[in-house]
Image 1 (cartoon, helix red, strand yellow):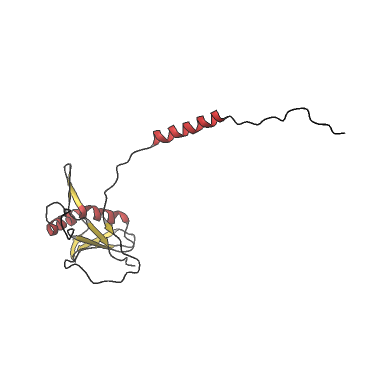
Image 2 (image 1 turned 135 degrees about the vertical axis):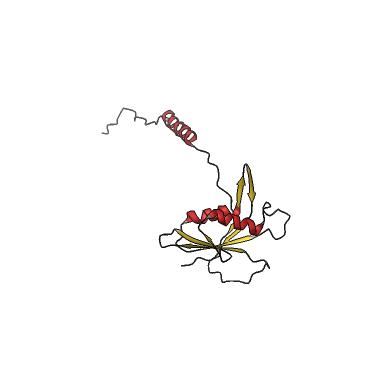
Amino acid sequence: MKIRNQQDPAKNELSMTSMIDVVFLLLIFFILTFKVVEQEGDFGINMPLAGQASSAMEDLELPITLRMHADPDGNLTSMELNELPMGTSFENLRAKVTELVGNQPGPSDDDEDGGPEVEIDTDFNLRYEYVIAAITHVSGRKDGDQIIKLVEKIKFAAPRR
C-alpha cells in the first residue's frame, strides 16, 4: 500500500520587487556617478602600415620632418625640424612651424592638397607625453577662445629600434 503525502508541495517564488529595486538603485547610482568629460583634441594622424617599404613621394612638396631623440630612460633630449636643431622647447617648435607654414589658419576645405604635412620620427623608447606635446604644438595654438590650426595632416615614420 502506497502512502501519499497529503501536503501540497511548497511553492518557491522569488520576490521580484526587491530585485527590481536593486536594479533601479544600480541604475541611479551609475547615472549619478557618470561624468561628462571634454574630449581631447581630434588629431588627423596617418600611422605607417606594417612592413611598408619606403615608397616614392607622390607629392612634389615633401612633408616637414620632426625628429625626436630620447635618452635610455625615454626622456626627450633634442628635436630637429627639417634637420635644424630645435633643442627641447616645444614653444620654439611651434614658432618654427608657424614660420614655415605661415600664421594664417590651417588648410581650408577648398584646398586640393590639404595643406602642409608633418612627419614625426621618434626614437623607439621616447615617452608618449613628448609625442603628444609635439602633436599639440605642431597642429595649432589657442588664441583666446579661438583655435588657430596650423597643420592638420600628421603622420609617423616607421619606428626605429
